[in-house]
Amino acid sequence: MAGHKRVLLAAPRGYCAGVDRAVVAVEKALERYGAPVYVRKQIVHNIHVVTELEAKGAIFVEEVDEVPAGAHVVFSAHGVSPAVVNAASDRGLHAIDATCPLVTKVHREAVRFARDDFEILLIGHDGHEEVEGTAGEAPEHVTVVNSPEEADTVVVKDPSKVVWLSQTTLSVDETMETVNRLRTRFPELHNPPSDDICYATQNRQVAIKKVAAGADLVIVVGSANSSNSVRLVEVALEYGAKAAYRVDYAEEIRQEWLDGVETVGVTSGASVPEVLVREVLDAIGDAGYRDVEEVKTAEEDLMFSLPKELRQDAAGQRDARALGGRTSGGGA
Image (cartoon, rainbow, N blue to C red; front, side):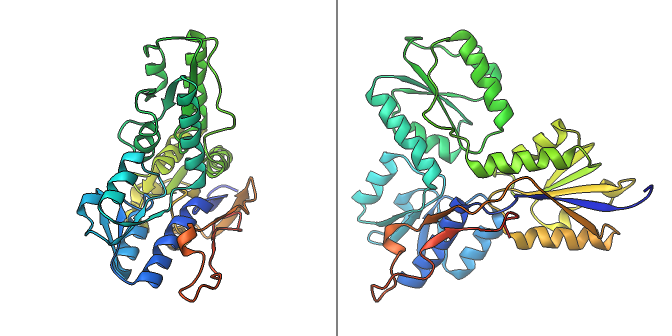
């Protein structure tokens, strides 16, 4: 219908089980031990979540040497290297590891392949906390491959003893392009035992591909340092959206983005609470986009146990919030 304004709302979107687990871990640590609780780096890459946790008494630091000796410190969902774990231990810190279990899986793969003397080509972004943590498990064996173009120039010692691993939050398509280029050069390249890109990243990319095909504009809710949120913008443009933008908050939406637009696609990265998506829907609803159709491509019901230190309450009873995760396909 010409001139009909509508919204295609991607599902799944928003919080994944690993993010929910990490955020709940900080909240429960504050409840259990009292403020302040220190967190190394951002617990997840979302400015709203970090700001809310700061208001509750969390203090975010860059490195563990900023944490007072003997204090409680939470390691972020992105994981840390053994060097960070050791540094926390040396300072007598009470460390709570909120690393996403899917990231931990990649860490274990790196350790195992290094033990078998494989050279590990880690597909990811230099400087990202997850990549630093994974590479830190076997620094003498890991080479980071930042892009498909770098796959054409990377040098290995023994092409028969090479394996690829990946950051969990990458674009599936770009990662496989990198792998294919690597395999062209190194035909004996080994695969990880299971897919490293996390289920939530893949599901959100599949959903936005379907949305983008019918959207004039896609709005991705997520922070600039959130790799999976930035990838969603790129995927939307690649799969047919005429324009795509990332916002942290609804007030960042510009009127000129909506000029001449009939169909707006909306999604959010895996570290984004649903309240921020609802605020975006309200904002564009005020501009006439009130017809909302959810485009669902998968159901998500995965949940992870909280770090062992937080599974019981102060009295030693199993806590009702011993699990982190979302059962809604939309991430609500």
